[in-house]
Image: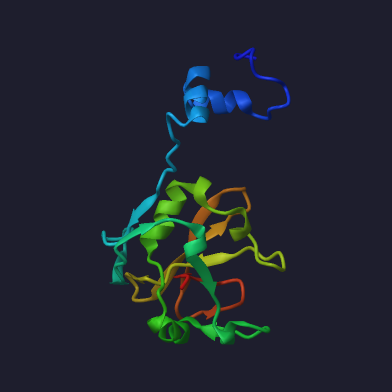
Length: 181
């Protein structure tokens, strides 16, 4: 152990001391001479979204600067997605018109900072992989089809994005990411 003064009952104490710079840094923190500041992860929801070849952003709802906190996000499911029901994406888009949906900038930020994604976002209460949709950005493929991108936990154990055409049905493990009130 690097710091002999630490007793073995302190779990990960050495890692904490390392983060504070030294035992002197730890003493300064404990005496109130220094403070730990939480990192704030701010997502610019006003910039243009990621657009791949053959796509265009059909619509992109800007959302200002969003300080990421999972507690600020809820998963919206239409009543038409519950109890085994399905809703076509174009109809769901109309239902979501007055909801504070998040745009694809949040999706892309989370993919670059996947350590921020809560563990319980991977699967729903029944064990289905969640496909979390970011309806604030609607894309058009060169063939004319509209789609929305989503965040999902992939079979290889990583977070990825996928997409779903608006002509297809949305079901109960396809929630929309919206701002919690």
